[in-house]
Image 1 (cartoon, rainbow, N blue to C red):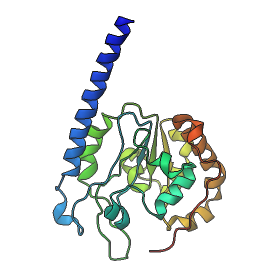
Image 2: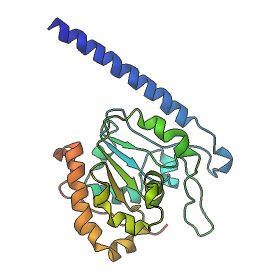
Image 3: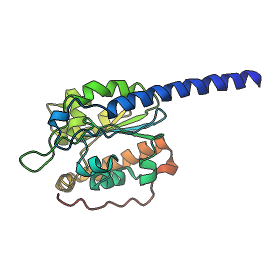
Image 4: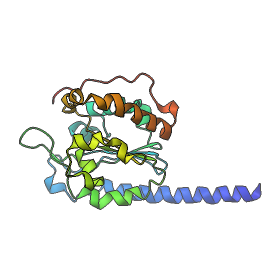
Length: 228
């Protein structure tokens, strides 16, 4: 009993040291101003997660509402993504279970066509590998949108996003590739019914295995994604 108690104390000390080091890195990320001259709303890195997280969501970059609130996927795209995963907000935002790390941590601004600009290229190479070292418990990584897919699956760059997502089985069990859940995906979903009929049931099963079946929302509902 005494040996086990000592072991538990050592283990707790190690966890505390890891958590402290992770918090220090997060503070560095959130204080980053490397891209400040290019960000119309200024830098506000948005990411979340703890070293115990088992599901990692790698997305594109925050939109204006996420920038304003500082909460990942706190918009209609998040509503749709949670519906795809069959997760309620409480589980989705439980940092001890779900980590969210976009390719670009700050809102990049808008292009001349009215859509958001691409994530800044400086962000992922500077921070992702360092952050992922503190996420050893990850069992499933979701690559959400073409920027995340292209960065982590460079071999897929010569294919369209549809072709890559259609090959979702090839990337299991470590990764699951998804289109971005914005309103722009509504037509894509209508044109690719296989995604909801074949891919989403498998996705929800994998998420359930990673987070535990009690995490799944048994009656997910998809909120409409209006045009911005």
